[in-house]
Amino acid sequence: MTLLEQTIAAIRPADPAALAAARAHQDSLTKPRGALGALEEVAVRLAGAAAVNPPPMPFPAALAIFAADHGVHAQGVSPWPREVTAQMVGNFLAGGAVANAFAAQVGASVTVVDVGVAADLEPAPGLTVSKVAYGTADMSQGPAMTVEQAVAALETGITVARDLVGRGARCLVTGDMGIANTTASAALICAFTGRDPDVVTGRGTGADDATLARKVAVIRRALRVNGLAGGPTEGSGGSGGLEGLEGSAGQGDLDGRGGLNASGGSGGSDDASGEAPARSALETLAAVGGLEHAAIAGFVLGGAAARVPVILDGVIAGSAALVAAELAPGAVDHCVAGHRSAEPGHAAALDHLGLRPLVELEMRLGEGTGGLLAHPLVCAAVRVMHEVATFDSAGVTDKEA
Image (cartoon, rainbow, N blue to C red):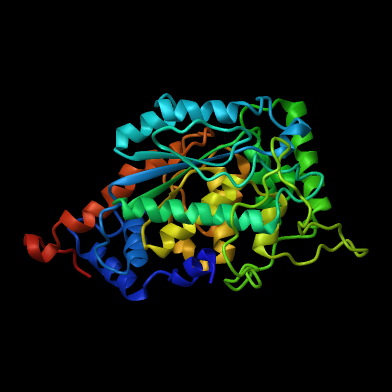
């Protein structure tokens, strides 16, 4: 079995007994039932994920920022130059980004992973180089990557999650960096939810009206040329199209600064009826996803397999979680939606996943910032389960039934 297959096989959905015990525990605490609102459901969710009540404290936290470039940038979908991806990696490593400030505030470690930056990065403390390719191909012209490259990036994310948990992390936070990655995010959300690009595409890092219109058109074209324009990807029953992928996927095809070699991909045009054929989750990811999306999906799977909660950040993490959910539906039980991004596609992704965001501050930065802000809330929700007295233990009279 491949690492991806092993990880998917290890994922278990929320434990029903732990969920029931956690709900009963919440109701026995010295407070009106439901008085903590969504925080009560967070604590119950984490108990189910860990299969124990009360759940372990989700501390310390580890933020992993997966960085990669996108061939679709050439279509003018972002006002920022492609070089900013590599420059921001340097900023993360120097401790100068918002994510660094937020991580310091909540006591989270920061790991930066080069999974597909279109430049060679100098070794540095805090940097993991797991480059699958120098960016993706232009998804508006064909598949962004091959299925093998998508699997390699997924397995990078799994490995990072395993390593962080092995070093003591008890909560994982998703982070990302990649100029034009909201374009790939919107395409993935369209493919998995069936929503229209007009509905789920946002301004990303500040696109003006003309750039936004071009971005929508590019996403629509990418879905069409990759055979994804007919509706959402069908559920995969947990396999996600893994059949036949024996052995590790390796590092994929590096083709220098020119991006991925898109040959061998699974894209295709619509059939004569206008209906797109059903696609597996892996094929869809390879067609219109990014290398950081694939790595984040693997990161989610790795956390779920270890029964360690994963706090999702914004629209990039949300779209990656759609991939993880198709590959292993039980993985969603191990996720918490840190916040709701101002990007419209994020609400669509969370709705499809059945997740309720903890914070809504009109943020759209990425990097893991929304997930980091939510971490203290998640910790507080679990601490209540450990430290708040029950009516019986405190000698407090409960209300009459």
